[in-house]
Structure formats: structure tokens, C-alpha cells
Length: 269
View: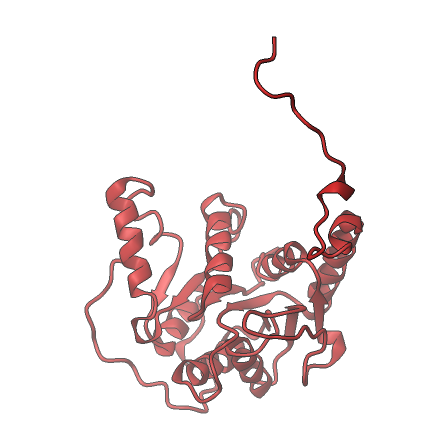
């Protein structure tokens, strides 16, 4: 016997608000997402898998993190001799795109129509040729594509995930991919390096939060540190990639002097 007020049913039309686009209710999104996924997978098949960079769309070209990211991208592309992937947006995504182009290595991008901090949507990249990127409408298709860009199918594939400083979008992508590593959806057969670039201790507060999670028991001690490698400098990141793939240390074509950083207190992450 039902007690209380009866349950009312509403039609979709009755729930519509004048501020909500008609498209939100009438789109055929499953088919559109499928088409976007197919386009992303075709793009990756043509350009090849490689290094995926995650990072802020808001950092300007005169910032030290931009310059460091551009340098890292150039040297890592030379080291692994692979395609460089990113969200093909502004900020640090632009830095890694330029770095890979300087190395004269393939560059691919999976854009979203509107980046955080931008007032207008754009499907066009300012200088990449159209055959090197795709602009997604749906975040789900974009995320699937970016993840697919680092999956190793054979031992000759050299891929990596590199997280640069960033905000909400970067953290979202970082932890979504981290969960895939944790659940062995990525790297279960052929491991993939996951590097967090802690430029100027940018992520140190995040690591403190993870320590708090360990103390509380929501993650196991050492669970997160086993999934990624934290690097404080480009030298450290390139050295780690060379060691991971058993490459000679001098295999990068250094146009800039990558000095070994001063010794600092090691962080447990």
C-alpha cells in the first residue's frame, strides 16, 4: 500500500526551461559520440601512438612552465621518436605542440570546441593542418581518444602520459587515467609510464592530500606512488623515460642545456 503523495510523471517538454537549449533534449547523441570516437581512432591510427600531455589551457607563453613544457616536449619527442598528443588547445597544450614541431616529429591533437577560460567556441586550430587534429563536441569521445593514444599494442610502441601543471580539467584527466592504471585497463600487458611534472612544487599540496587519504585509509600506503612518477625537472623526466625504455642517455638531441637540478628533499610521491 502506497502512503504519502502520489508520484507525478512529467514529459520532457514540460521539464524544459527557456534557458536550456532545445538541442540538449533532441540530439541523437549516441550516434554522434560513436562517429566522433571513430574519427578519433582513425586519427590515432594514421599518426601513431605516443606521448600524451595534460595541462593548463590558461598559462601564457612567457611563463616558465610554458617554456619548460615546450622544451620537455621537444626533447621527449626526440628521445622516444614518437607522436606528441594533447588537447590541441592554448596554454601548455600549445607549448608541447610547438616543442614537438621543433623536433620535427608528428603532432596530433583532439580538441574540444570550448576550452576553460575561453568565451567563444572554435573548431579550428590556428596552425596545425586539419588532418592532424579533430575537434570533438563530446568530452567522452575526446577522453577515449586521448587514452587510446597511449595504449601500447607491441613492445616497439613508446608511449607515456605526462601531466603538466593545470586546473580542474587537467586534474579530471589525470585522475581518470590514474584510475585506469589502478584497474589495469592501461598497462596491464605492456606498461606505460605516467609522469607528473611538479614544476616549482606545483603539485606538492596535492601530494599532501593523498597522504591524508592514506592516513584515513581511503587509499593504501604507496598505492598512488606506485602508479606514477613525480619529476621536478625536465632532466629528471627525460632520464626516467630513457631508463624506462632502456634508451641511451645521450639519445636526445639537446638544443638547450638541460642542467641537472639541485638536490632537494625527496617527496614520497
